[in-house]
Image 1 (tube, one colour):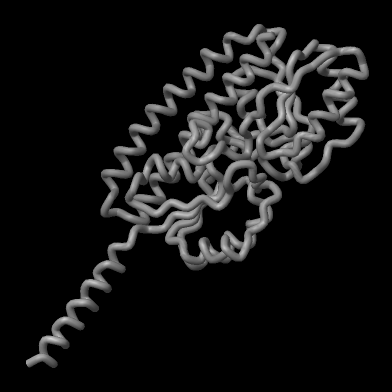
Image 2: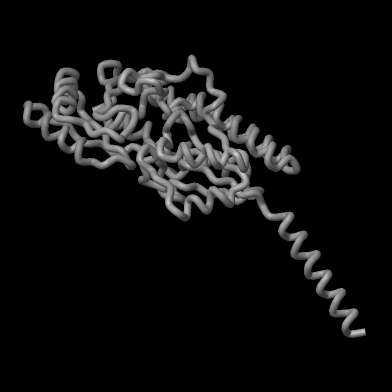
Length: 302
């Protein structure tokens, strides 16, 4: 009798264990923080969301660690920006795509809406999140991928997505209103690298970056002197560092401007390729965008 009871107990334990495994939350691994935040907003607690690149990480230069490879291997869905942003991970994504859903969330953005800079020949500017309307298209790709992965929670994902799209509509209008406060003659944004092309096009501000679209190349002396002359000609009051790019080049630019007789200050750091710390306002896409806009408006209204 005791043996029979023992067998029944073992069968029950195995059944519960197997049932628990089948109910494991899908694991979604994202590269940059902005995509990770999209997953959090749309999926809520229905998935295990993991972001590879934290605050201060430059995705242009990022190489996968052994831990990253394991996370990607364990993932049920991999989401990345694409457009050559995560250039050193492309081979990994190609291999992973043979085993599981691996999606570039910029894939449905019409080519006519993408920017192809002269110094980035053959590639498009990957910093699409700086135009909120383009990031809304990326959000649609995320919800589509989540529904395909986990159709049982389809209605939850769609509802969360619709709610978040409304927040993005409000953010888009808020940015436009805030930028209107900058006088026309002051609408020149000087940053460490050329990440604000979409922001420039959408919100009507000229942008000059010391480096090009990718941070893989250093700015040379001619670049610094050229930008210094632009700053003096247009009497730019403030230039900006970025949270994921070393500050030395902007400091060198400031020194070059001062040597030519013009005083320029370095404004509050902008978040470009990475967001702020987890749990902070700047650790969300909307919070990051609002921080940047507030910093830009404050610096250029001087």
